[in-house]
Structure formats: structure tokens, C-alpha cells
Image 1 (cartoon, helix red, strand yellow):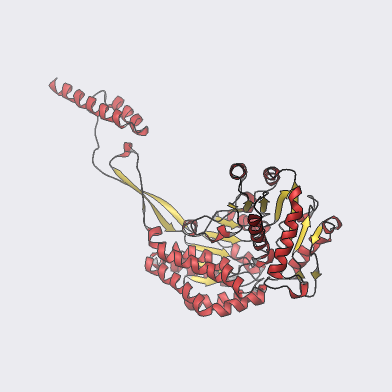
Image 2 (cartoon, rainbow, N blue to C red):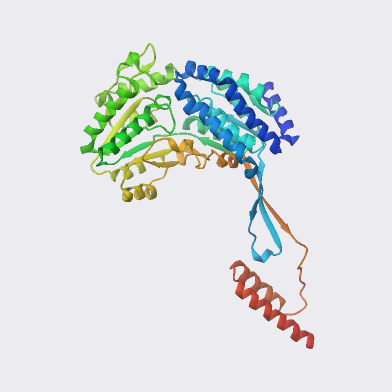
Length: 489
């Protein structure tokens, strides 16, 4: 085992056992420090995101800096409330007693960061871990080296360096970290790596949160109002190519639509793509680039299947030198092709046609549960069917990806798309243990002095478990009468 990693864990354990991270003052100071870090290093962060992923400053603020600032501000405002013990009702059979749920930090937590949103997917979980009072190791992705360097250089300057540490490195470092015993592991990435994380955590019975992904479908119903349709298409284009050029776990993976509606959809998608991003591969604007050659080749290979290539109805051009792939629309690629069975994580958008839009439910249910489902419809009956008959990490009607920005909604997957949740109070809960606390009084300890007492106790417990207050009153009145009778004797 690498001595450096063991030393880091030892230092963080010592800091946690000192109990200073449990105070509200420490937590608020760290949250304020994150806001200061963002304010004083915004341009450096923008430049790092541009070098690693080619992100435009507007995209960088919207999806990275702004997200973190919003989360930190919300946590700063709410952390005292989150920390407060929550009163819990106690069964009448235990009267007199009182109960509470007390949130306590888990301890030393390990956070793995994905490369596609290397700032927000680093600092957003850190905010939750800080709010809950933990000490932290943050492992940035080596595939976004400039952002990793920014985090490694700025976090020790602004946050408590004895309680929050950044460990850089590649797969070898990650493997060494996973051999250590942590109190919690939080991972954002692919299902393949998620399985490795869970396997390593199981050796120490370490709890994990896995933010994975999958193929997020969009259901597009026939919208009779043309302006509604235009809005829907713009939001689909934004939800597909806007965040990191399709390299987002909750980005739109494919669209389900009725056959008769497909030509109109394709025409409007083409217009929106040209308006937002241009139509020349060499001069595409406002689009992040594919992160590296490995991922470029992976996405490019999806298009090399002859049957898939034949389904391209817009785009499809590739610039291997600059690792660029044009926003591409495909109509009914083979369902057994890799493009319809792997998470695309790139700028390709398949459109699958159906005879009836309600068939979309069966189509989705025949595949692994997605991280998100998006449905554009004004049909309340269809909405209810989608809600009741599908399972996904989240479900959004008439927009795409905006649920990620809501601190009041949990973000996480189900089944193959992930395990656990975070954002807002849910982040605090993810990095906390909810401890049950019960206080019992020494009063009212009655002793058996009369033969019917055991029957009375049994009846009292039965009534108390059923919250039969009237029955309890009548039972006590009967007991009083019984006691008086015995006293006269």
C-alpha cells in the first residue's frame, strides 16, 4: 500500500476524532470558503474547463460554477436546520418517553469525480460532506488534468487542509485508495467502474453512493400547437448537445416519437442545431469537445456499423484531427446495434418511431432503468401512465435536465443507473448517519400486586399498539375500580 495514501487517511481520521468538524461554525466556515474560492478563481476555472473540454464560459458558469455557488449558498442557509435533532413520536406503550433522530457525520469519506463536469461534480458532493461534518478525500479525474490541478492548488488554500484533501493521480492511485477503509465512498462515473467501486467497498462493508448513468429516453408526444412543438424541440436540442456536447449522464440519449411525426421533428431539430451551433463542422460554436481520443474513437465506432451509418439523416461528419463529431441525427438505427444498447455519451441522437406513443412505455421498460426520463406531452392520461408504469431516477415533463438544478429534489439513479441520491438536504443525509435516540423516564413503574395484573398489562399493550385511546381510558377506569374493590376486602 502507498504510504502517502495511508498518511492522508491517518491525518483525516485524527482531524475527525478531534470533533472540530462537528461544529456548525466549522461547517459554515468551509462553505463560505468554497464561495470565496469560486469568486477569486472563476477565470482560472473557466480556462481550465476550456482546455480540458472546450467549454464556453457561459456553459462553464451554467453547469459548473453556478451550480456549486447555488448549492453552497443553500447549504450555508440551511445547515443549522439540517443539523437540528428531529423529534420523533413515541408509541404510547412507552409513555413517559421522548424520541429524536440525530444526524451525525459518518467519518472520513472518499469522493471520486467524473471528468465531464469536473468542477461541479467535485465540489457539489463536497458541500454535502462538509455540511454533514465529515473529513474528505477528493479524487479528481485524471481525464480533466487542468481542472484537477486547479482543485489541488486551490482547495488547500481556502478549506481546512487537515480535514479536506485532494489526491491526484490515475487508475493506480484510485486502486490504492480503494484498498483503504473509508466510512463512505461517493462515486460518479460509468456502471462498469461503479461495479469495481462497490466490489472494493464490500471488503470493508463501506456504504457507497453510485451516481452512474444509462440511456435516458425522451418521449415526444404529438403536440397540436406548433409553438409548443418548437419549444419542445429547442429543449431537446439543449438537453442533448448543450451540456458537454452530449457527454452527460442525464443528457438525452434517444427520442421516441410516432412514425407520422418523425419528419416534422427531424426538420425542426435540424433548424435548431444550425441556429444554436452552426452547420459547418470546422466552425461549430458553443459546443464542448469530446474529452480524448479514446472516447472519440468509441463514439466514432458507433457510426461505423453500416446499418447505423445508413440511418443517419443529419450530420455524421467527423474531424479525426480535432476529435470533433458533428451533431448527428439517426432515424431508426437497428435496435440490436451498440448505439441502442450502450450509453452514447456523445453528440449522436437516435430517433425511434412507434405506431402509438403509448408504446414508448413498453419500449423503456424492456431496457435497464434509466437515470432520467423526459416526456413532452400535454396529455394528462399519458403523463399518469408514464409516472405509474415506468421506473427511473427522475422523471421530467416538458423539459430536460433542469431537475438537476433543484436542491429540493433528490438526484440519483435506480437499478443499473445508480444507487443513492444527493443535492440539498439529500446530500446532507447521504453523508450522515441518522441515529435513533430515545429518552425514558424512571416514573410510572407499576408493580404487580393483584392477580389480574398480567391480564391488564397484556390488554394495555394491545390497545396502545393500536392507538385505541378510548379503550385505554376505559381500561384504566376499570383498573381503578378493581383496586378499590381489593382494598375494601
